[in-house]
Image 1 (tube, rainbow, N blue to C red):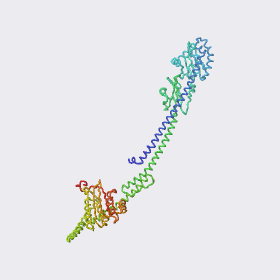
Image 2: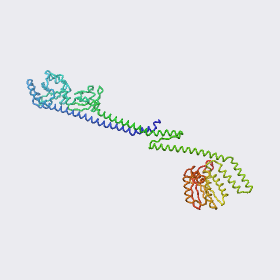
Image 3: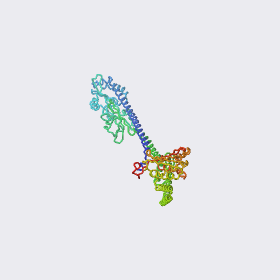
Length: 592
């Protein structure tokens, strides 16, 4: 199942679909089209040969008809039929012999001409007549009886022996037979022209071809007229049922194609047959050539597909194995890039990703160490915090005893500030806690500063219980006092506001300090935007940069500090953070 889902298998299937199958289909269509065309040409050739033989047969029949017409038109022939006197019969022989000699020049291949008159006289030419064979014997011949059924048309008999011959009774001949009349249409007789089977075979060019195994035969409704030489094992019934262009099968397990035409004059079917294997030999040769080319092409395509698929899938499999090892925790893997294609670029990207992951893992490990160290430091700072608070309380009591109320108030504020700063390890606190810390810090600053300081903190009720990153407003306020208000050496004023805008919370800290020069403002804005994280690592740069870094670490680069300032008119710092629900304060409607 894994192999079926592999890239190698999918590539092989793709190559088969786009090359092997179309190639096989083209080969099959080409073979069928060419074979059909070749078969039609062979069939046309076979029918053409048969037509030529039919023309030769018709020419021969026409010659026999000419012979018969030439004899009938003679006065001697008419007188012979009309003669009833036995004494006059011998007188016609010499005249008829002269006539026959001239007539036989049309077809000298004939082997005998016989005329039987209804008056009982028989004339023979070209052979020795059996004198005991009378008119009645002739009339009893079956093919002579059939002439009446043939509507007086000429009839060519099947192959028969010449029983009416004196010397060669067993000689087999065909006979052209027709009923004839004298000029006065009073007397009639039968004219028989004999010819040997060799003549018919010669006319049909039926010399057997050992290379093509073909031949010609003739049959009518009664049986074979000229038997098929090579189809000795075929029955007449099976031949009679076949259609033109069909295949016949012999008892010796051979197949022959049969083409035939009908001759209405003789009522013969002249058939040409070809051995199927020889007839289809050109088609078979084309078939083997096409299939060999197709099979060879398919094999070449398959081998090429396997080679190309292997070349493509091998680096992917190697990359897969490397990724599996990385997945199991072994990050010291590297994919060896051997190509500059997409797979090579993928491997190169994978190697770079592994390097980045190793760096990230090392960075996380270092951060974990630092975090552990910070937690230990914080825990150390929390050791016996009550001692620090009790000490401050003792100093406060002493100040009250000395009636130093301002010192006492300052100590109370400092204690509250310290308690708020170390009372929790959480990085995010409710906004109202951030405000409490800020208020304590500002009260201390009012006592510390030589010149009056006024401030106002306005936070909308719907954000007081939402979360914020711890200690982001105090550094901004401290920066405003130190760099904005202190240099004035006069009355200072701070306005701190907080509200919800859409799904964000916006804090603004506005002072009436001396402002920032344009060049310094541009430099400050660029540093906050591009490298606040690096600058926050230096001790002298932990104010705004530290706040910017912590906000963007928690919320992303879309949040942070924005500064607007005009020289000698004050500065406004805007802090943007996303609204975050505090689940510990469910009584608040919006942030609960």
